[in-house]
Amino acid sequence: MRMIVVALLFLSLNVFAADFTQLLQEIKSQSSVELAQEKKRKQAFFDLKEKRTSELYQAKRKLNTLTTQSEQLKTTIDMHEQNITKLEEELQRKMGDLGELFGVIRQISGELKADFEHSMITVHYPERINFLGELSESKGLPDIAKLEKMWLTMLEELDEGRKISEFNTPVVQEDGTSKDQEVIRMGTYGAISEGDFLRYSSSGNIFEKSPRQPAARYHASANNFEGKSDGFVKVMIDPTRGQLIDMLTQKPTLIERIQQGGVVGYIIIGLGIIGLLLAIFRYGYLSIIYRKIKKQAKNLDKPTAKNPLGRIALLYKKIEDKAQTQKEVILEEAILKELPPIEKYNGLIKLLAAVSPLLGLLGTVTGMIITFQAITLFGTSDPKLMAGGISTALVTTVLGLSVAIPLLFAYTFIAAKTKSIIDLIEHQSVGLIAKEY
Image 1 (spheres, rainbow, N blue to C red):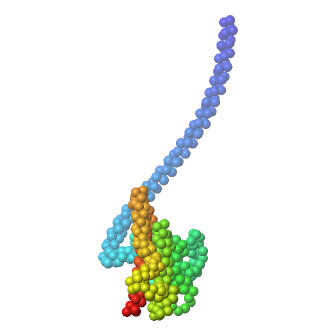
Image 2: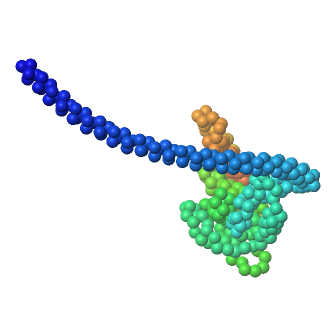
Image 3: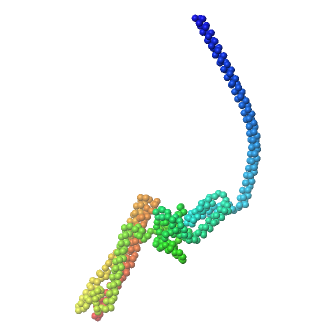
């Protein structure tokens, strides 16, 4: 066993010696390669170090040069700034009042912009608004060209303001659509198209057709002016650039005012119509009766039953043989019998004249109640909520007085006519009795 162990150990040492020799050879070979590579890397590092050293030297030289130039430029800038400050002071000193002048120009350009924005001539020159806006907001001094342009803009406005121009342009209709129409512009005081007055909209720089036109007498002037080619024509103009026309279009018509009176207003108008018709009828009837009585008074010997005096004369002929006292009583009864047809409806006309103001007062109270109810619910923040009640209050009062005043005059005329007829009948009746003496 010992021999076997010694043999195995000897064999293992031989194998290990062979492997170790091979390993040593491989280590030596790899070390040579690594040493060569390390030498090559060192050489590259030293070459790069020399290159970077040269570049660092060049950069430092360039930095020194640029630093020198920077100091020179800084000195130059400081010198130029001092010169600029001196020149600005000299400019301010030489400019004097020009600064205030340019301030005034900026102010005027702003005012012109605000004025031209509401001028219908801007339809022809829309670019001037932007120009004036830039000029009014400019911080620098405007040059001569801008000043001349502003001056020309003012001259254009003055020149167009004296002309009557006819041109084709879009017009916004009542339904909001746009339509190209022939427009006649009368300076800055109005525009007409197809017999209607147009309104200028500054927001869209376009003409608009108002849903409502002014009263007929104003509207007719637009038609006459548009259809006239020569000569002089009367036409309504608006120097307030649309404000007066808007006020005229918002002014309610007679029918609209009557509608504001409500039910009470219609009742007053109905009573007024009835009273006036009745007064006209009664006045005509009394005038006919008066003429017949006057004609009969001239010929009492031939009485007729077609008039009150004739009927009284016929009755007198029948009672000529009776005593004087009886004749007086009978004639007095005959006169009283003739009075009711003559005085008929006078009291009704007087009643209508007295009731109309009372109905107007009733409408006034009703309107004020509506107004106070609106104030209770919504407060006084919106006057339009109270407009309905106030309109009823005022319109009914006006209607009541408008009906009462003519009815009162009519009653006065009819009462005077009635009194004259009665006086004539009484005088003639007394004359019949006086003939016997």
